[in-house]
Length: 75
Image (tube, rainbow, N blue to C red):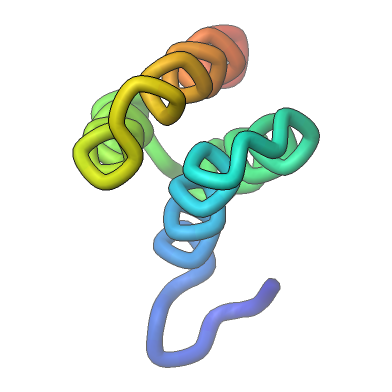
């Protein structure tokens, strides 16, 4: 995933939100790593999780927690 009009970090955060909403654990891990690699801070990941939870409710909350836990060793 390369930069275009949106930078790569933003695209990784968008993909993370989609992974949370779709409950795809492998994608969550992959895009947390990608976002961190491209400079995402924990606060940015947390805000991405918040938006996903706002749109996806309880199930998204459970997967959002997994995303935050996955980000801790990377950031």
